[in-house]
Length: 319
Image (tube, rainbow, N blue to C red; front, side):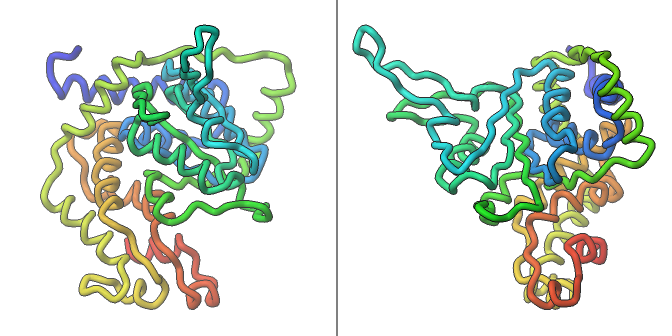
């Protein structure tokens, strides 16, 4: 596709700019969220997006899917949703043979809306698909489409009747992103754009083949020893009562991050470097992705809650 990896890296930087421009036709502001969602896609990770209702989470994911030229599917999680509603089910056809009817998980970009509204059994069905990139029904294995990207949303305000994701399942998500209210000027633009009757069309900027190619390119990016060293030491600092723990962790954290955090820090730093036109990540790239990677992997203790120390405070201290 490209003559050299250097040429491909330059192409990815340009494609990233084009993607941002195309997504910006519909999504006003939220540049950091768009940047990190694209980082996750090219790093072959998944995203957990936390934000109050009405902040265009669905629109954001749908627009990114269109700009990438990928098929999109939205699953609204409810307390009565069953695993078969997600992965599909077998039915008896006219010739009395079992036929598998594919569920909404057989798309390339999945929006799992309000994932904490559904019981653990159903959550686990989606999380298994995310991890294995395949599902098994009645002993038959079905491969999911590639590239495969899940963006799950959670509403942070209504916690009645919800089933919080266990830590082990949260660990499957590369990033945990917090979506905030738009700034005043951005909200004015949103209101103007959405109440005028003009509809912006989003056109695909990339092909499926290119996305897979660039995902492999990200993996091939060389990393200096000191960057590996920094990433692993940073994760080590989060583990309380271990030789490498930071005193802040010992005081405020009851559980630290596992090795998956170190892996994601490096792969995220590689993608971040390429997006910024660099051929190898440095420590600044690791720091750029550290907050959304560590945020959902650390567990605060009672002391932190009592003293009003937030997860962000702890991570910034460790950085």
